[in-house]
Length: 154
Image (cartoon, rainbow, N blue to C red; front, side, top):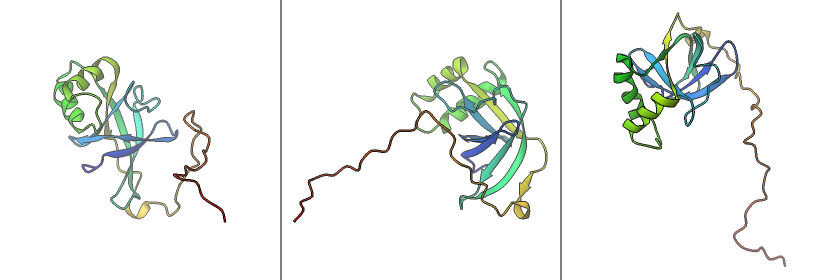
């Protein structure tokens, strides 16, 4: 888990969402909210299922997680939020400003293992478990290919 930077999180048996995360103190930390990633229901959830993949790209473990919220003003917030902000790729602002924005607008969730893994090692299924892409308003119509110059026909 300590090498994880991406995890799939499912809330209440719903679809899994790919999220960037930071592994610290035997738990994963995930930031959600405006300007960050969206995981519907994570901020209010008490539990979730986390799936991690290995270096080869395949799933290596799925485990139930206890979800708790790290709130601004806690001792944990003061030590954890800057560490998570330092690991944030493509940050729109410096880490101290990012932590302040998170305190005002976002939720920092701690996902800690609640029980033994659901699937790992030999218990991993052989099927791909690939799903159809979800509907999204971000879909665009397919455009014609760009041509740098005119093609002459003889």
